[in-house]
Length: 292
Image 1 (tube, one colour):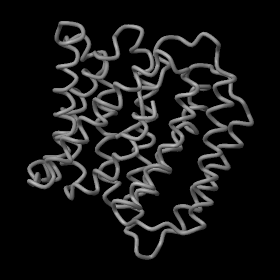
Image 2 (cartoon, one colour; image 1 turned 45 degrees about the vertical axis):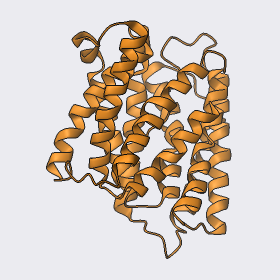
Image 3 (tube, helix red, strand yellow; image 1 turned 180 degrees about the vertical axis):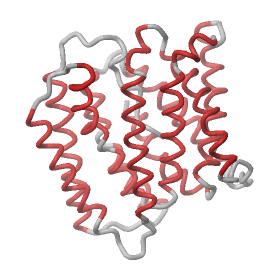
């Protein structure tokens, strides 16, 4: 599980290091990841993906493709700290959404801790160092990515009742690739692949698209889902460390306070939400890992 979190935390830094537009990275990453999951499905279940499975995953796949494009584009227009800590607020959307859509019980204290995270996020966003490249266009794209990721989790929730993890991810990646293609073509970025960027595309596809997701699936066999959720709260903090070490992005002390508030608030939201969740959760409630 720790390996998966480290891999995901490196995703935003890899996108920025590649030096290519977000739509370009998202399209080629999705294509390579689709091939990897097709191979994994073939090796583990000795079959290919079916049209019926692709149809079942159509909506989650479209939303996932939009999520990846928005996040990869947004992270090139803002700081890694902004991108990761905005994206980390997904649980604050999922808790009330679960109550509305699935009649789940909501712990009122969880929502108050969500407010703590929002206050922390404001400290991060409004105190960006003057030498950092952070635009509100980039921040808004990350907000869209956060909502689309939450939508993906909600729409893919029941697929585990009918499909294996391998077939879900294979179908989602294929549909996502088809979704991203017109976006990359429309922006004129689909062919903006450089010799320097190819290793980053391959690394991102293997490390996050296949490796991190696979590690989370493996971890679910022995690590409680609640523990996995709590551990994933550490991802944005690790991402900021990578950005500091590999991208020379600076952080102001007041931003560190904001990050601490975000992490503490999220940890409490996840903890309190797990305590009020039904003891026997239906198949498909397990997280498949964060975006990127």
